Image (cartoon, rainbow, N blue to C red; front, top):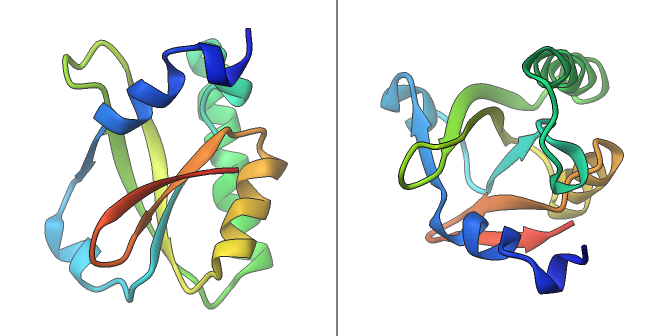
Length: 121
């Protein structure tokens, strides 16, 4: 399956981004990059695998980018058939954020400036 021939990009475009506390995101400087470690290569994995991958992503962010601000958030489908924990991160360049996404085998990230964009990794 290639990304171009799948519904993955449509799913990214319809995804919903949610924070536990909206005040958390208001504290983040723009740009904000939404990075996940769930479901590498766009393939579904076991819950335990995804939680471990998320934990490793957080460790990586805190150790490699100690000045970055990280807020945990949830991304989910319109119909809520899937959801995944992600990190909203400020203090990274786009190149750094995309590098992290590639390191964790992600297909894309979300970038928030004035609008929300899906950017292929």
